[in-house]
Amino acid sequence: MSDLTLSSFLASHPHNVLVAIDEAKGSTPRDRGAFMLVSRDAIWGTIGGGQFEFMAIDNARAILAGSGMAAMDIPLGPEIGQCCGGRTHLSFRVVTPELADLLEERQRQEERGNPSVFLFGAGHVGLALARALAPLPFSVTVVETRTDVLDGLPRQVKTRHVAMPEALVAEISAGGAAVILTHDHALDFLIAREALSRPDLAYVGMIGSATKRATFAHWLKRDGAPPQLMDRLVLPIGGSTVGDKRPAVIAALVAAELLTVLTDTAAARGAVRGSSADA
Image (cartoon, rainbow, N blue to C red; front, side, top):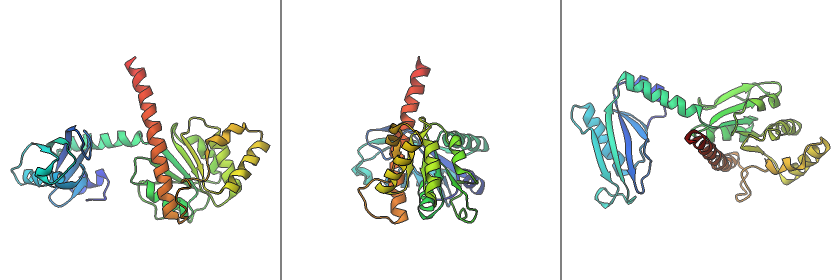
């Protein structure tokens, strides 16, 4: 499995086959529209793994060698050693330059639709969270006041070095998230105040404890903010089910939290847009 981006894979493996799920019935590991690319010695993406993916890879490479089938209808049952119970119809197409352009444009469109997640702070937890979020369907930006902590992040993660991080809250797309993890409690509060003033954000979270939450609630009250703003603040982030405070563990918990909240929000926003369009 290649860890290249789609564009890099296409550039470095120009001779490949697109394997796409055209139809999925019943219980299947991936849905209609999922695809992968198969070259003679590398793979990009997945259609779900297991024996049926191995069969698809073998067929794609047979096509590259001059034989193979243009389509496969595969039952995901005992006959191939899988127990999903569903059925998938796969299509196979040799990737031409024109098809490669279409795939890259599809990728760009999907990425433009990804929820924005701004991570304010690149300490141990911030960096761990950036790495955890990088392969997920988010547009991730790490914001820092310090210049020496933004190296070594995954290529998908954008970085911003600014003197006033709270000013960047305005750049988060509607339906996105602000996760506040700076090294300065006063700065945390400034960023959170800006983020909570935006009702269109799906998630505003801050690393900390119950004591920090009480302190921030007092600060908000003194600032004249409506008390119900605190209801929107997730503090502490990651929940309380797991007590392990190692950065990687916190990052995994927060990533799951963001997936749940932002996926539900994106689905709801899409349903609203769909209803408007149908009308």
